[in-house]
Length: 202
Image 1: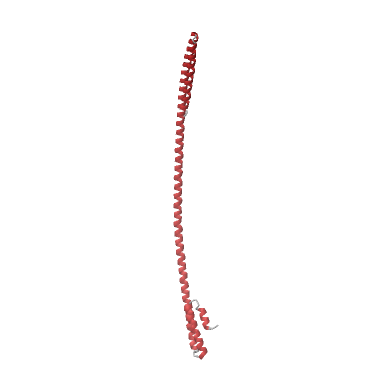
Image 2 (image 1 turned 180 degrees about the vertical axis):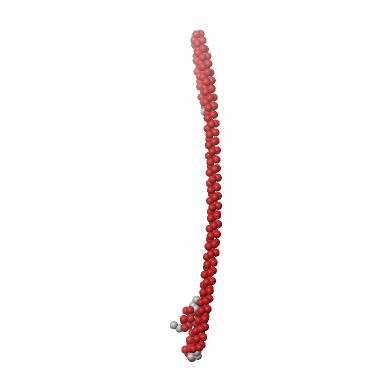
């Protein structure tokens, strides 16, 4: 392998420097091969220069690598701190949201319980009111029915009395008139009873 190629391989990470050094060594090799102009001393100096360049580049590369490693380490630490901070903030937010949800659940439960209690009271009140109204209607109907019965009893007794008188007086036309009057009164009383039932059962 030619010296120029070796130099290029060593410095290939820096393309421009590797190419320049390779061209330089290529020219040196050509000069040596063509006219023996270069002495062993010059060759030795060139080798020393190359060695120094190589060592310097290695040192520079080491410094750069350590610098990059340090930057990577700092970036990792910074990102870790940011991630930890973000986790802490998210944890606080999550706990806050959980607390708000819990408060909302308790508030809604209280409201539901209150609505249930109010509805229960209203239903009981309506039941009590309906019971009172039903009892009142029953009492009114009972009084009305008793009144109608009493009126019918009086009417019937009056008709019986009138019929008795008519029979004793042998007045046939009067009997017919009294019988018709009795049926008319019975129909009127029956209609009154039906009307009362329909009115109170609405």
